[in-house]
Image (cartoon, rainbow, N blue to C red; front, top):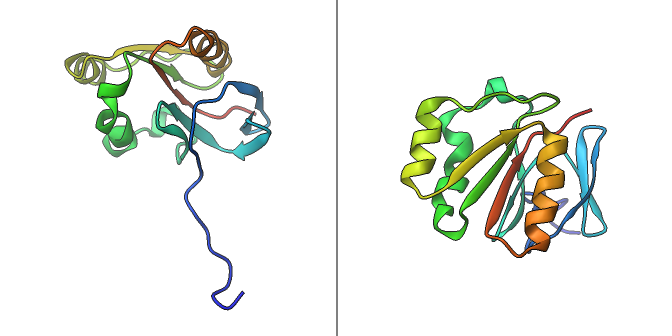
Length: 129
């Protein structure tokens, strides 16, 4: 290894159900990821978010960039349901996306069902312990 260790952004290039969640991460496609994730038609991406209260405008950039590829966004807000601010909901609605906030566990289960039904769904899932 002449160049040393190469660190890449976490990305799984495909759609996969979430097999497990908790302990600060997720298991899917025979892999595990520590931290939050975005599950989108383009793949599963690491999401550098630790708590819903810390979310900023830039945390949704990838979702808005790919909004034409899904109709429903499941927003896993952590251990409990936290409502989506009206302005953010309005921006997603303008992009043609319905946002459904729920606790992360409920979002994972709902995502798996909608994925199995071959629906155009995305999920932004905040990791829980």
